Length: 313
Image (cartoon, rainbow, N blue to C red; front, side, top):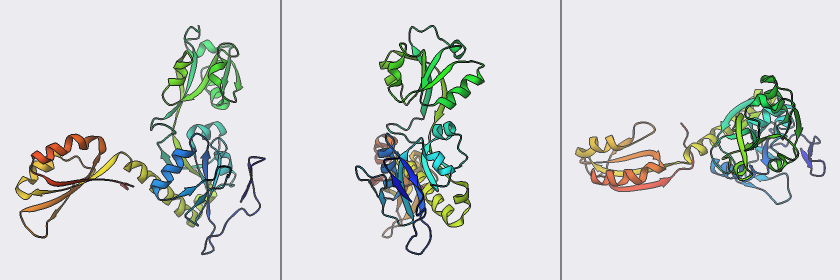
């Protein structure tokens, strides 16, 4: 597979890249733009080092079973549907907007700045007479999410003009349009422009999607599922840490009552004495600052906190 930056669309000469053992590499599309850095960081935590040069659309990964290409997130669902990509990471909003027929492999709850879902909201100036969706009758709306907005209006029985916005949508009200449908994580930018949210059309999270034919192929499906498992494991580990400690056996019941854990903590006998045990757990990082003093008072010693790369449930 090659890529022509001038046309910003993939070409199909040499659609597959063979691995060292002759199999076809899985073609993975990663989002270029605002979600790119967060995605590359997540891939690294999952175990893949992805190197991106400043002007290249084809990053290099330390895995010959993966061929990675950068695309705008909005384009990835269509390329996955058409088989130009075997799988890709994009927003659920982009899947709905393009109406792409793809297989959803996993929901990946991360975004460019926070772990909050990316919301597409209907917003108007604070002094606007538009208070509900029905007040949009005959009005003009600017958005990047044209198809989703039109379906939203249709569901409310409202006829309004929806125009595509190439960006800077917030500055178009009220001089150019009456309302906007804009994506936001926190709403800060909208408030800074004096806008008021009157409804949420869609809450979107990042998804790993796959082409149906690729996912039906045993070898590619195994690779795609490996990607999903490790990405989810990296995300699960992001807010957790491991704790190790020693404890006197007679104080074990009291210590176990204090321990939050994903499952039962691991307790093992120390090799040099029957009177002491070693305990190991996984806990939320934010709990540890309060937990460690309690453990010390309960008799635990040698407490070690360590970061986690992945948590596979």
